[in-house]
Image: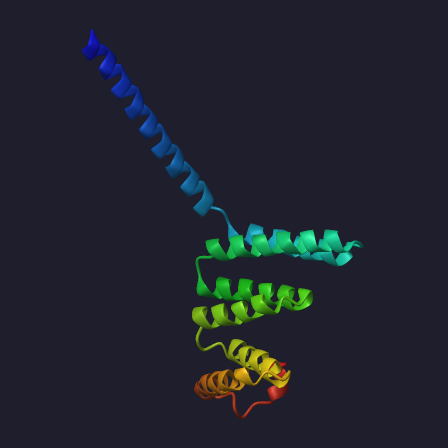
Length: 168
C-alpha cells in the first residue's frame, strides 16, 4: 500500500514538471514570435501622445512607454538594418527628452550593430566634444580617440570629400 501511494506522488510531481516545461516553451515561442513592427508602432504612438500631452507627468509616462516599446522591438529585431532603424528612432526620442546618457548608449550600440555607420561615429565624437568643451578636461583624450576612430570610418566610406553639413 505504501508503494502505491509513493507511485501516485511521483507521477503527480512528474506531471507537474512536464506541465511547467510545456508552459515555458509555449511562453517562449509566443514571446519570440512577436513582430517588432508592432512595438515600433506602439512607440511612435506613445511619442505622439507625449508631444500632445499637456502635463509633464503624462509626457514622462508616454516617453517611458515609448522607450519600453523600442527596447522590446530591438530585442525582437532579426536583422541589423531593423536594429539600426530602431536605434535611430530611439536616438531621436532621447534627444527630444534630453536624456544624454541614453544618447551615448544609442551611439555606442549603433556602432556595435554597424561599425561603418558614419553618422553614429560623428554623433559620438560630437557628444564627447560637447562634454569636453563644457570645461571638463578629462574628456579631451576621449575626443581624440573617438575622432581618430571616426576618421577611419569616414576614410573607408569616402566621406572626407563631402560636405560636413549633412551629418548635423
